[in-house]
Image (cartoon, rainbow, N blue to C red):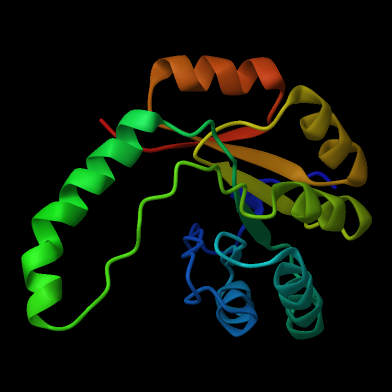
Length: 175
């Protein structure tokens, strides 16, 4: 499916807000107003994402997007920094009888492969990526399935890398 942002009646793209705020109902409301609604797949299981895709298709016939978190390589220094911050909070936690979580050095891929499989079987008109880039093979497969792909970038180097993997559009954030 070829998608053009300039074809929107209202030049608004609703931000995909992970954690529950981006519902199928919100996507449909934005679409009804002439914009482009977006589901957030971050922090959601592949099955939960699929259920939201199905519900969104029941509520709107207009194009919509799905945003995915791209898994990265765990950074040991980040785990150390979280551990140090955890220790700074220990006194407050003890005061309120709370148990602080232990930092995990393992990678959480947020169900990446399962979500890609869902989107290959049941393509969304627009798929965006945050926190990194998919492999070129995934880009090609999603495009063959009919999705317009958007990469979120924060630097010129990230923009060049996104162009190199073949995404269709960029979402530029930062200075």
